[in-house]
Image 1 (tube, one colour):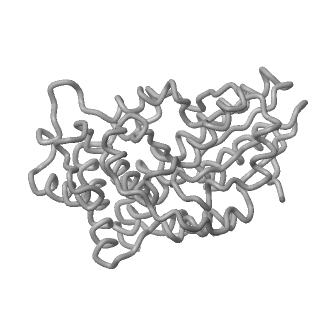
Image 2: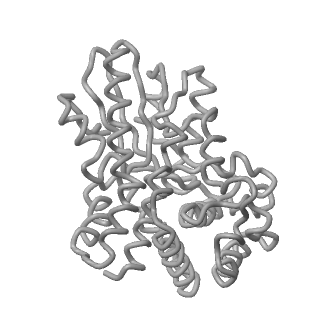
Length: 321
């Protein structure tokens, strides 16, 4: 497995590991896109990534995918059932915290994207942006950190699949608001992305360049790395999802230091923090029915949140529809 392939996995992992709220705060840009064909709603989720934690009241973990896809948004009846039972919904970041996430992605005042990236890299970014919308370029977007672009570009590409629809996490928030559920954050917006900022300048540039390599390769071949991921998600195949991300990752030795840092930033460090928030919420409010929703990778790629909760003594089991 080559390093570009590895970064492709990290880009995919962002779709089930890190929810970015860019379109909540860029409506003028999002609305400029062309709506997808909505003539037919295909079959939805076959088996949800849903777990139950035994407590005084049932507690639930729900794996999501950060892609606007009508098959995903047609929620499985088991998900709708637990949403109707719940008192509180935890998502990676609740709406009140999402602006802080956006601010964390942006360079300090006085710095621009052109100050931190070479012209040829900027041109490659602009090519990707213009493929989504002819009016897009780095100049019309906020001045993002170098490390942010490898996360942002795949998110924009995913949104392009159906720009008229929300991602699954946003759909859950909408339902929670309609049902008057309390909505809380699993993560602190000030620390959620700090591991990316800890990458060296060289590592950040390599992460970006390899992500651009992959996106350009996909465009040339007319492929989307998300298709396989969405199919696995709809089937609810946790083993295949874990294999997709970890099997070759663990056997590849080249660039292992950077790969470990990226995986820690997207997944493993955050798993530890999420598991603590979940355990504390259950301990403090055992009579409250919680749904803890996050990208599915947090629950299946180990040491996962499920692994860590079981290690702490909680009994966690997958819900079989």
